[in-house]
Image 1 (cartoon, rainbow, N blue to C red):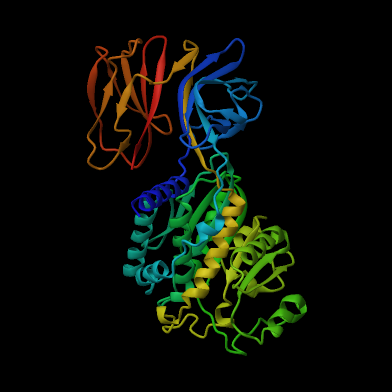
Image 2: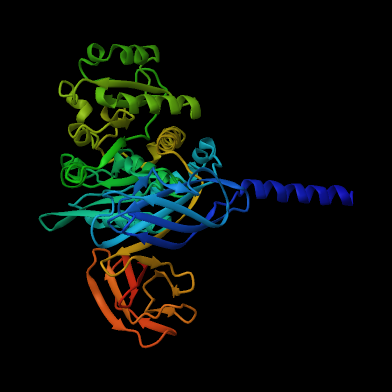
Length: 521
């Protein structure tokens, strides 16, 4: 019995170790530049307690890591099946990529090829969590009655902060009201320029607590944020909460017109939640817009075959968005077979069927992005639409959870989960500096600052190079302050009150410089 117990304990530990596979640990030690040969040499180490081989990728950025580009033509310890260890090197002969003086960031990514189970990811959608979030969201939310609206905005702030997702707020004024789009960005490790969006509007019409419209969509995006933020992906995922949809899609129009289109964002697909919580299996409870049977005969037949029941999610695309529509259908069938889906695609941007343009997917269609409206049918199913009876008691959380699962599965499949570690470092190029050494012997801490942080500590005691100046910059390169260093020692640097963001600390002398990043949260 004693030996059986020992064996059982060992087996449990073995299973735990298998389940908790660690990501590779990457450390960039040195970046060297040979300007004459136009060659970059990156020296790095990779540790992995679970795997001996990794795939290695290298990327560079000319704008402080806001955008990275993959390097495809490097040599050395680069590419597929690289043995983990120390003293690894990547050599890259560049052409015009590094043009002019400035700071260039390099990122080395080591992927151990351990796969994520999408079913395990979506099984984290928990009905209790959805109910709890619904209770936080439900209630009139609009600029005429801003009290609860501001509470929901504070909820977004808290959820983005706890998830570690980078948050941008797009604001505009309507009279005395400051409208806000909340835009969270989870950057992809390898193809960050390719973007998938999960969005919902969070405002309500006057007089309605808006549980289904659109508390259900808001809670759905919150669930995706909480779950997907735990993983890394090759491509970027954005979580967006739009304001003032009920005033005529104002929030999404602002985002597409003033951010997505001007910045030429490479948005690959948008999953827009427009009421995903109302379900009924009673015959004859679902109606359709006039002329639906003529425009979408296959979807109409599926509707009739189902007894005109409101027991399905509607996957609305335009023809340009057919690939995205098909992916959602495939992921729903594979991972959430109990979810009934009726899908169809409108011609053009559905100008002939304006009822299909009544949500935040439409500005994306107009800008030629692929986008879906995932909806329970709004007033064509839910009699509580825009009424004071649109309360949390009317929500079917099992149906709602299944819609969210299918959406998360689609986003995860398209964004591509990756089990990888990475490190970043900076190469500063100027006419008098041909190499930048990483601070393998320099300690700067803390690198993550909070409201109570008043200083950082810098330890130079073991470094051979003598620096005489320390400079502090914001992410746009604006000098905040600069001080002289009198000796190579351990010293404390007082810092001013800083806004949330990324900052650069640069140590320099007449010939060399070294740049490190710190973050104010």
